Length: 266
Image (cartoon, rainbow, N blue to C red; front, top):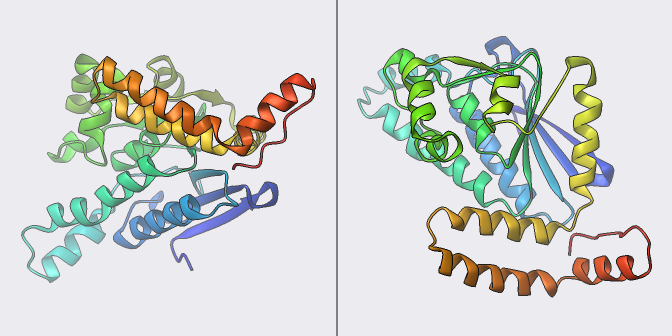
């Protein structure tokens, strides 16, 4: 179904991992791969058996950003002076919205360099796990462009104005450890332990109360624009919605019975 992705299923289908599968280009993004990723995330979001989603890359890189041959050769062939706008609005923006609105946690497994749109692909996920050999670079300015893939929205919120400007203006590479210190990465593991440690975390998330995580994600997203009063009202609404789930009832029962809860994601 997906020609540009290698899909793995784990934990009885609770976890789905999509690997960008163009290692010869360091997994550079093309219109087909962007479309496949969007469709993959949408399918996982709508599938009640999927509890967690992850994105990674095959080979030595996570993602080197936009494949310029894919953008400009096709653009020149069609004499389309508006090709960049079309790629951003037709391919990148729908993917950003699909990831941020996904009903399941979306985790980036950054196994190597993440550059330009590849860096932002990781950073728009709900959290990032990275190897100590990975690095992140907002390389847009190196070819005269601005951060896209949600970069101008998320970077100032994640880093503050000063550091967002600095990284966007200079294209400086940040190591995985530096990125963690700035709050861009949740955990950094050695290459040797990356797979095992990441899978431990993904397994835990895959067995958490999925609806509660979805509502948490929704609350955090709305906090960017809400006043405190609006956010508190939203918390009340979403907390009630969470309290009506089967998983909440299971969590309370397990606590009272002093046993480990068995959540179903409902």
